[in-house]
Length: 191
Image: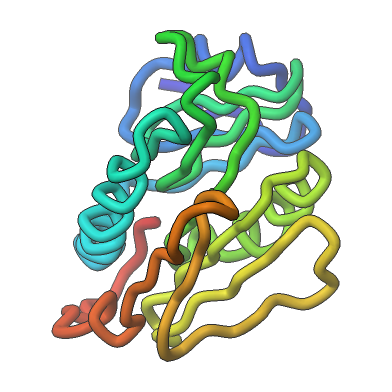
């Protein structure tokens, strides 16, 4: 199999036509971002976060729905991402991923291979697209960066992570230490 040329610009249709090779491909302004299959640490952190967040979202039916990747968020012919975890308004859950365009929350669990894309390219794209809240979860540093559309710097959370689905509901809270507890630290990558 020929590997895609990461220097050229791609369209969403081209990327969606790639063969399934176990890698995750995303586009920011046509720039191809590729990450290998996630590590065990990545998946454990993501699972813990999802186990806490999904019931919170589900407790408020009709407001929003939480999804795990792989799932396609497409904002244009050269803007295609697959957040690790994201929440969209219930009105956009139609059975077609192309209708999920308003992200109330996007979450990326970083690894060495995804850090540049998650912290730079994708963060800027998420801010431009008006993603209400973007969490960059860093297992190595045991912290969460919290970004909003107009932020120039993130809030760094090391104790209690908070998020509110809607003004009329209570906050979601999660102990950050619990998210990162008892994780193996093997060498390597995957994010």
